[in-house]
Amino acid sequence: MSDDKPSAEVDVTKAWQATQSQKGSARRLRIFAALSWIVAIGGEIAAIVMLKQHRFDDGNLTLLIGILVAIAVFAIAGSLMWKAANKHDPASKADTFRYFVQNQLGAIITLIAFLPLVVLIFMDKDMDPKSKKIAGGVGAVLAVVATLIGISFKPPSVEQYTQDMNACATQIRAGQPTTACSPEVAAQAQDIARDSEAVTEATKSDQNPAGLDIVYWIAPENGAKTSATPHVFHICENVSPLKGKTVNRGSVTEAYAENATRITKQIAMEQEQCGFTTSN
Image (tube, rainbow, N blue to C red; front, side, top):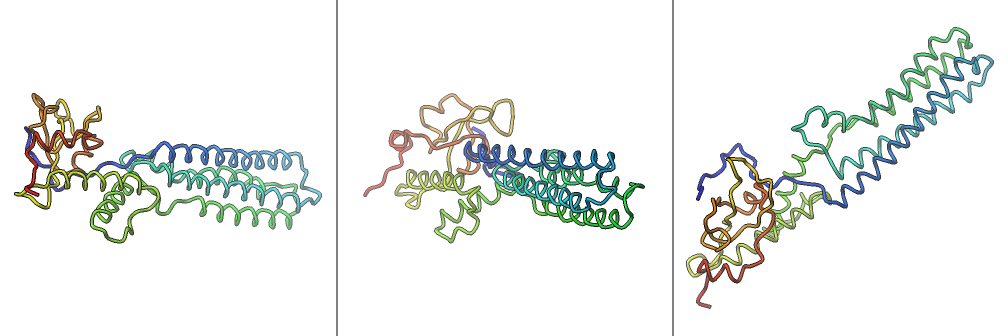
């Protein structure tokens, strides 16, 4: 049996993962965001074509400003939906490039939807100077506002949700106000809290009337930190499913960290095998 405990620097909490429901919500929001951005870029392309055809040379300032406003509206709508999707299914900070692009895509798309058009407006030699100044100024202001809205200043991450989830689980177990239990992390936190409570209850004995927060699970193969195959965890090392296996021990959260995803369903049998009985 391996008694090695993870060092203080190692994250021993269960890594947060989006549920199927969360992934589905994120997928729908990203599709709608993409459609909104397509409309915004389509509006830009239409405006550029009209600009090259000198449609705005004889006035039509209201039309051009209307197109700019429409681009901003659809760009902002897409960004807001994309941000909402990221709350349901965030990226991991471990993948730096994906983390940046996924969280700042709204700002990137907004710049694409505005910058070429605004530059062409200012460079147009045939448009009335006053109209060009007004349209270019409006376009620049809308571009800045829409881009700022598209930026994620405090983007969510798998790591942050993992921290929040385990803080939430701790609050649930302690009966404290669940200030860390956002909707995104609450379900997984409840799983950890439920299994921790079940282990504590199952391991009560005359020697340990308060129970234990120690479980046992099959160790990952070949020295890996986590197991690719989900396992259940058990309340002692002497149970029949663990015989002949390399076994790790630790808290419920440590077990989850190695993909031991739930407590055994054979608790009564294991209590007998482990000798967890009380005189009451």
